[in-house]
Image 1: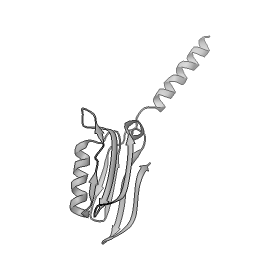
Image 2: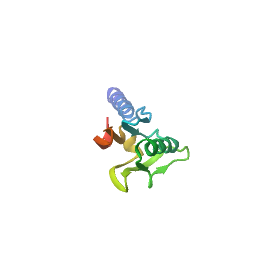
Image 3: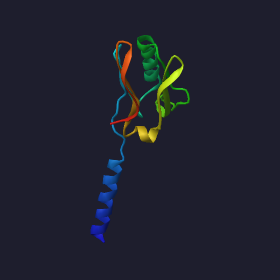
Image 4: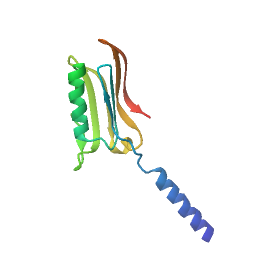
Length: 125
């Protein structure tokens, strides 16, 4: 009985540690050649607004987070994001806080001059 109790306790502790949220700071690398925006459960409304301004000024693209929800601390509870150019949506994703605790969700775009050479939206490791 004593051994089974310890095995159960050990297994429970390991499972709780495995379910703990990862440390995933927001990645916001935006330049004239790229957009690398990756969000997590730690992302705040102000970080998204900062990215929105940079993307508009450097790429003349619109980043929308309409439909996203934030907690009392300004952190993402649910994120719904899209990137548009000339009114046409070119990338989008959505994710809830539970999902954002373990993986990044975002948008990556690379360009050479006016030509977009790579674009991906969704989950990132």
